[in-house]
Amino acid sequence: MRKPLIAGNWKLNKTLAEAEALAKALVKELADVTDTEIIIAPVFTALGRVAEIIADSPVSLAAQNCYPQETGAFTGEVSPLMLKDIGCQAVIIGHSERRQLLGETNQFINLKVKKALETGLQVILCVGETLDQRESGEMLEVLTAQVKGGLADLSPEQMTNLVIAYEPVWAIGTGKTASNEQAQEAHSFIRGLVQGLFDPDTSTACRILYGGSVKPDNVDGLMAQDDIDGALVGGASLNAEDFSRIVRFNKNRH
Ligand code: 13P
Picture 1 (cartoon, helix red, strand yellow):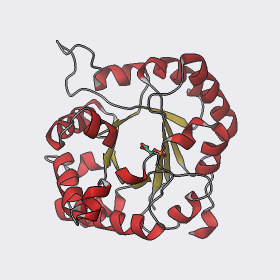
Picture 2: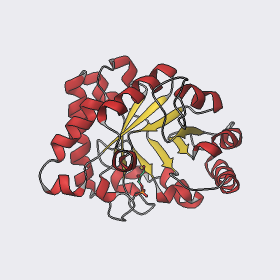
Picture 3: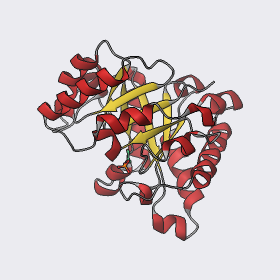
């Protein structure tokens, strides 16, 4: 019932020429995919060119961040309106790298979520605990604050254009994927939070992606979990063959 979604977060990688080459390879490899939604998120400078390349393909475009204002004196920022204008359908908000390196708070993330949804962009809201938080027993508290904070003031209707990505920080770029059970446990907890904030229909319909060292050889097991509806892929999304294999995860295990 929830259509799987595989998203590639290219992070701070790929020159324009490299981004073009990867986008072209993905269009070729993924042209026939209809049963899984596919999103790629290149750097800002490559968005326009990649938008042209993927225009007639099943691949959609996301940015990796946005600012919660349409226009104005906000040097160095890019607004949801401008992202839409250049061809984005979606935007990643609240990635742990931005929370940690740039000090983004749940409150600021919530402003971005609201502005992006108002503009008509699909939002991929990232949440996830650090290793310290997990080991000191704070994981559920942290996830609760991130989910409640990020989704504050939204209506059930707005939730239909929002996807949550659970990305345990200790699994990002480390090669240490959460086990299928650890991921399922966190996803089920997050779905419960969404139900508490909204209603059962909203939580049943809400897609929750897993992110953190997703690779061709672990995606099938993760996708077989009841509450895992897709993946937010970092490193493996920079390689067309690996990302395509992840998009074509083995559905027989469902
Ligand atoms: P990796 O797949 O490289 O661990 O990155 C995950 C991630 O942060 C995606 O947003």
